[in-house]
Length: 424
Image (cartoon, rainbow, N blue to C red; front, top):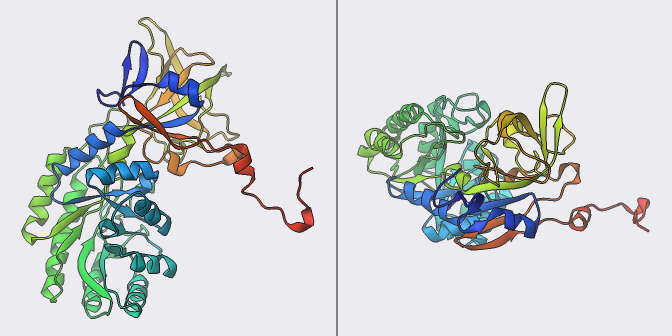
């Protein structure tokens, strides 16, 4: 979380690039998401300098158009999993040819949108999808490059809810069926079956599953080519893990070496789809402590950020670093506490049994590594308006999503005529 180019203490106060987060909190209120352009750029360059192919940002990690545009201006394409994400990427300036449209269950409407928008590649996960896209594209006189997503039945050794490459997962097509499907796809109108895709999971800290999966992919490509189908493009997905709480992250050079060793002799172009790696470290959630409450067996630090702002701890038992915005002075005591929000759920917590410096109501906290799967999973549960998002660049900052007002939130509802207006 702490880095020279992103978030760091200066004169005892937490800064985001050149912006004082306490001063920002006074101006816009709490809670809020805060993203560092410098960290996003650093993470993108780390990948682009090592990986032998095109980086397409997995938009689902953080869909704010300003974040997508930041990466697009650095040279990234986009990996999207819905028509809505595709529209966001296009609106943020990503060229249609640089968009990969993935997803386990696209509707006919979404596939028509991809065809008419000129999306560069559609990743397919069922034979139904392939037949439907062939019919829709050929009826419009178009040819779409497709990649069948292979399920290699490889355990990514990550959390069960973000593992996607095992036989029991819903993603992809069983590896034993893929060669036959490519043989059939080669004769389908409206289809350019020259690519193949694989993504085995997210937050991988061990590279061994990649080696196993890529070796299976290489064998499959040779089999498909033996049938006369010219596979020229490999979409290797994403999933490289990050050190949320000091874990040892994979070496990118070693990852690139595995690709070269297992797939390098195939002569294919590569696409990569990182999401979390590019944006997680770039974001914090700034919150204000409401109360410090001593229960019979536990101490609770109650703050105004909750599971509605960061679902990952509740959903995945995930750990995020949490720091006081005012740097603790030497000799400041500490104690274990649960860091919780005001939402009416026992599962509303950002940390459990966390050793924390002694803090008081009114103090500010910063929850780190929150640039991925924070705002995009945010909700209005308990009728809590969505928190704003801020993008930093040097000493400048901009609101890239304003705080939702109660009026905007309530206006989303419609009362039927028999209930009247409900007002007045």
